[in-house]
Image (cartoon, one colour):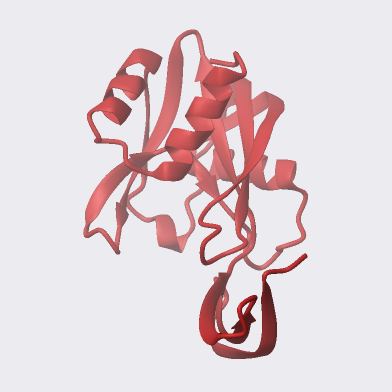
Length: 179
């Protein structure tokens, strides 16, 4: 049973990456309000590991005004219905230059369910073949490197890896015994 009834919905803004809508709502107690929702396609995040190492990317994040360390991840905005494993394989090779012979689905999480329905598919990538990194225009300056899993964990504990998607994906992989 829904606790909130949508009375009307209006698109406020959209581009190829996202849509913002504003809904007029009625709460269970009869009071009215406004709820803003961001709609974005689901994406994939990849946990690439081998022999006690994990591959990470570092890139400039405009909203933060600095470079951040993250797991490889992304979506295909122009193909929102693409198979999640195809997106994961594509993003992995695009950002790291690694082709994974083995991809195992770890799980699915929601990114920010307080204001968006966007979620992400989490994949474990193993058994690599080197290929060519193929960055798109938004990823200019992205670098990739391999580090020990223990270093990755320490960077999380120190707050130097603050991307919630990367932290959650790694934690879920570890809890399920993949790392």
